[in-house]
Image 1 (cartoon, rainbow, N blue to C red):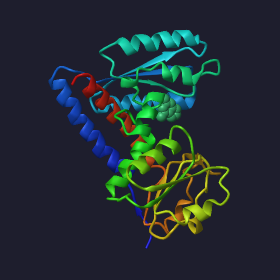
Image 2 (image 1 turned 120 degrees about the vertical axis):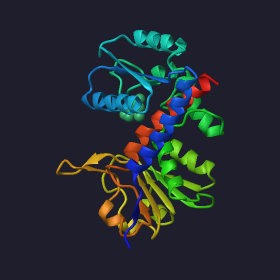
Image 3 (image 1 turned 135 degrees about the vertical axis):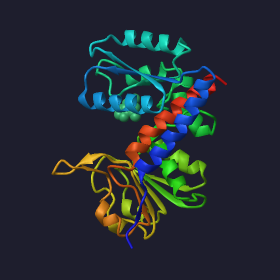
Length: 283
Ligand code: GUN
């Protein structure tokens, strides 16, 4: 029997509805939750992503501002702008769209965001909070993956989880979140000697590499839950993930599609972080 699909669109819709009621509750107390997005330069993909973020926000009642800045803006000016936004009580979430132009140091820029407004969860303090189990913002993509696992009633305690990919934005925080739920976590990456030996033991596999067909049917334990974070294009230009979907769905118990899986959940979790930031600021 082929795997059941985890519908990211449907789950994201539910989450947006929850954000909408939390937003209404804050508005009733006179607080308008607000997200401020900074887009430096005119990278075409970033323009699309930021437009989605603004639309998602306004649809749920959050105020969203997209501030466009020139590609040759001096880094010091961006840091000064962040300082002003950090101090502005009407702004609850701040997001600097990546990538930044090459003359800017992305680490320095992210560290200039107040952790209380770091709705991307990229600040080193947010990363430290996740690592130690303290309250803080979690990066949206792995947080969305956890929500997907929760939605199918996946009990992680004692399970083998394999994360493929070790990025700061997905792989590493994903491993920490799974560990926090008492899974036994293995992180595989481009230098892993025998990926298949690890994935065949896994009850849960999260593929977050950015390369097609990293996970194939003969690498998956029957009944496993497979979460595909990848966003790639095939030869025909069609959107696809890191997982050989057609093959793996014959073996797995659950699988996320691409598109319509992790992508919408990432977008939804940004709204959750923003409403959370607004609630904390006005508690
Ligand atoms: N560029 C691509 N994805 C993201 C994201 O999630 N956050 C930010 N800030 N930039 C991105």
